[in-house]
Image (cartoon, rainbow, N blue to C red; front, side, top):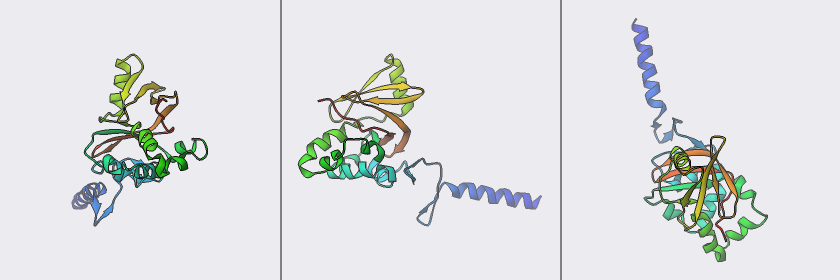
Length: 190
């Protein structure tokens, strides 16, 4: 009986330690992984995205546009975060052109078009879509609208040019909002 109690105590200690950090080293817990990096709900959108290997193009664009401080702010934000692969689907030279200082305003407009000034989980967004009969307009920080819908149980996001992105990873909670990783860069209408 004594050995069983010690084993239970040991197991309880292991469970307690599994979700904490030890001496500055993060131990994988229940936090979601994005691009091979653990996302922490007590960090901002920028702090978390900067660690994700599949969001490096987005992070570079946010910095070039001068939006890192804004997206590190209080929020709340819902960010539809395109992956590196999403940026690679754009016509050749597009990303390089947008990162040039003379295109900062255009880059800011594109990036803020990916941000909704509210914290909306995928379940909340899907409920809004359902309540609105299959489509829900979501106003963006840029001033345009994204059209939300669902397909095969997934949240879909349509931009002003008719491009449709699929949310490939939903509900990555941040201290100042929520990130939904998407497979297509969204473009405002012209």
